[in-house]
Length: 351
Image 1 (cartoon, rainbow, N blue to C red):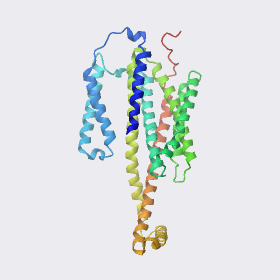
Image 2: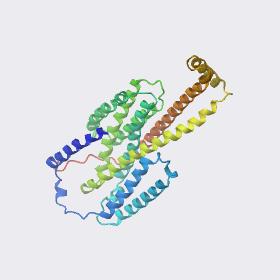
Image 3: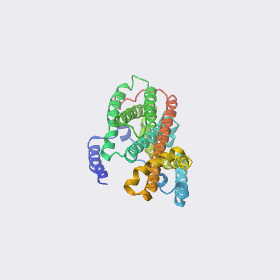
């Protein structure tokens, strides 16, 4: 738990540097202090907090089977519905939802939500796969995933140079294409996968993220007015993080449910009438009999085979998740076509 305290010194340093070096642009300094929409703030806090609670605890408490989850979802839906109405009718909304009428920003927000789902789901699933199924220690699992950072660094440098030279829609499409490619590779993982293959997949996955984020952010905000930037940034980042919560919750739920489905299908083969099962069971009995005795060899052999079946079912559940991630990434590519081509917004004061 101590690792989470790293946010404190970094956060205080960021706060100090913000106060020292960042100031509002002139067009914001000239505006008068607005009245805060406390009702909108309260409704948004209630709606998002209860939704996040449901996403975090849903699988643990069996989703709608739990009474408190049904109440929490009802409260969240009601609060967010009233929040949307409130923000659309009030003169000074805390979140200006009207900017979603801008086509680029609306499509960009949808795509960044999908990116959050894919990115966070992959980030959550891959270490779980390495440690629970392949038996990697935490350090080795972390090293296998670390090439993602190198890929992101290289892609960020390339994306910064490509913006303005190449149509940003192509860059976004290429990013989602790389996400889909890494998803296809991950959907082919087996128990025999090598460490180098995992590193390659995570490297390709890392290449995709800056291509999408930089190009998509540029296009999403390029058609907005300067005074809309603050509210748009809040909505954009909120939806990316909310997409991440949805992605993690969705994949952990599907992992548990699909593992049960595959287990139910595969266990039908563990019968006295299946010759392959009987051969494996008898072979294990012969190996175990000298070690534990004839009376214990049978149950232990059956336990070993069942443990293997559970591992195989879990592997297939991971594969299902990675396939779903791939399909979602592929579905995002056509949406990029509907973005308007726009040049990056010049910095304030630039000529």
